[in-house]
Image (cartoon, rainbow, N blue to C red; front, side, top):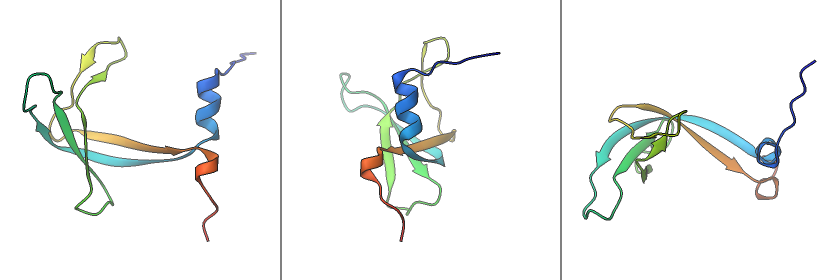
Length: 90
């Protein structure tokens, strides 16, 4: 019998309300100055055209190496909220 003990972060994530949406990297934005990070502009499917997210374009792969998103990449955008930040829909 396998028994998995969940750590505190895993338990906390299970308690949160979540939704995962599909997004696409629309463009890569070079930094204006060398001390600023490169950004990836992501459009979220189903969101209004005015709403685009710009996030730092640095991720880690499964080996812990830094990687960057490519233009046109399909991504998953997850929104999480603590239980006290939500209410039943009417």
